Length: 251
Image 1 (cartoon, rainbow, N blue to C red):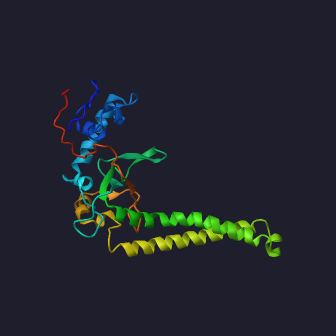
Image 2: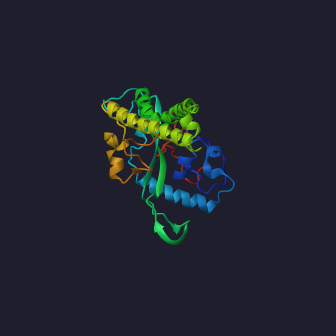
Image 3: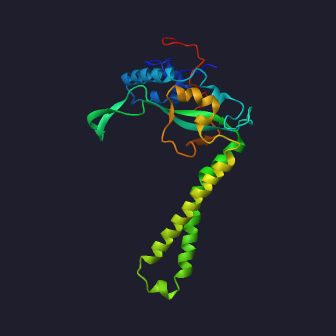
């Protein structure tokens, strides 16, 4: 399906970056904004072509799959959502100053940074959310428990005649204790569910080529891959490699 491109003067119309960022039309393309200069669009297209050349040819199969790729069984359960992961690559080279962007230029580890959606089922989504959110639930639980303990101890003479900061120390100590317990439970959940799903994206067999091509997870975690689980892809017609046959110069 070809999406109408209303722009008549965009210098990157129907180029690879246009087909990627403008996959839902010009109005939703970040390069269509009036404050984006034409030379910036051209430079962005050049960068994107380098990024695109480092992707495997079947990169779109990860989000177009009808089955979950996080399930350890194959085929996986039916797709229910998308796990969107920030994937990074050293190319193209990017340099900036060492101190607040100033001074001697130093090459950064990240040259490309893209959202990479992967099909996930409702069971794997539930397991991941439990493991991911439990430590955050523990903050709220710790706050409530800490507050209740401080209120319960406040009538005691030992608390009333102690320095003013003691109740706060008790409160913070209980919060830290409950948060640590939440982190421990989260790791136990990961270990338990690891028999059924992949928590680290490069443990997925189909992702090995991406790793071999130099891709890595931006700001990854040790026990599990950071991801945002959404019912929708970044864009409705999101594709790394467009099937749109139109070329620059076409209307």
